[in-house]
Amino acid sequence: NYHGGLIVSRRADAGGFQPGTGPFRLERAAGGQARLAAFDGHWRGRPAIRAIDIRLINSDATRELAYTAGELDMIGGRRDQRWVERMRAQPNTVVEVFSPGEFRTLLINMRSAPLTDPRVRRAVQHAVDPAAIARFVGADVATWWPSPVPPGYLGSTDDVPRFAPDPARARALLAEAGHRDGITLRAVVSSISSQQPIMEVVQAQLRRAGIRLEMDVVEHATYHARIRQDLSQLTFYGAARYPVADSYLSQFYHSRSAPGRPTMSLNFAHCDAADAEIDAARAMADRERQLALWRDAQRKVLEAGCAVPLFDLRQVFVRRTNVNLGYRLEGALNLAPAITRETRLD
Image (cartoon, rainbow, N blue to C red; front, side, top):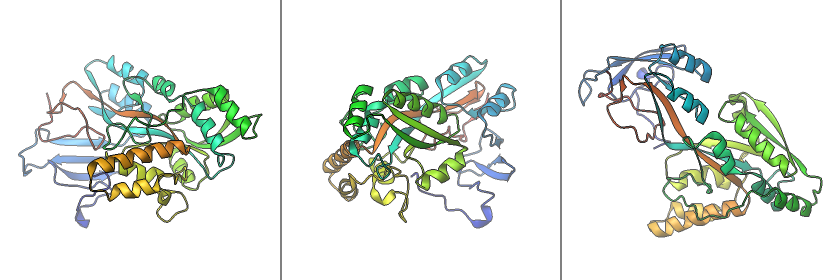
């Protein structure tokens, strides 16, 4: 479970690295590095790899350089088509692209004028072209999806209202709402490579519809702090959750999860359009009725103009060909390839 946790002795905690019952034990952790040593008493048997050295490197460029220089055997990759294709051309290299993805959404702050007017929110929905954004990111790593709940989640559906990209329609809606000269919105944007370039594309799309987007580009930790202070009218957010519709709907679209609430989570839209359906589905024992409630909730979220669903961004990892995972990687709920007792260096 995404919000589950390990039961760990306080003595075993070492700077945030939480040991569990796996085939490796934490030997040391400090300064953004850790060493895991094989635990030969593992209940499934002696691990093939004797030790794993982990380096936490935030910079994409530095991480890639360390890999190409031969310092690293496996890295978390940049989720971008051009990067993936460049790394596929590297010798003795395997690029793993797998699910579940981290779903990207543009949340529309319904409490912030002029977005308090549903016609303005609908104009934003018509101004953004999610399919074009997914193509920009790349076919191998990004898939457009029209629903607020990511694809593959229990209860997700594509049977939802669609708002075709139409700058002319967006301009007409703005004029109807009294904004013939267009509007200006502001967004707090993270400078990380998986967010700022996407928001620059969104900015260009909005401009064609008469919507000027002022972007406050900040480092990632500041972005997280400011969006939780309700300082962004349009919030780009990406996340993976336990793959059941309730986990996404409750965190992103229930009024209890809005900024300023004691139970706030990620509802930067202040959406309350589907509270009744979300609550009823959580307590519904009949599966078909539960699925119907989730479907209705997704429809209501979009009809209310709470968000523009964008695309599902798959995980990207790069490894050397001599790193044999010991299994065929098709997906990983921990969003990274598991190193098991059978993983080895050939």
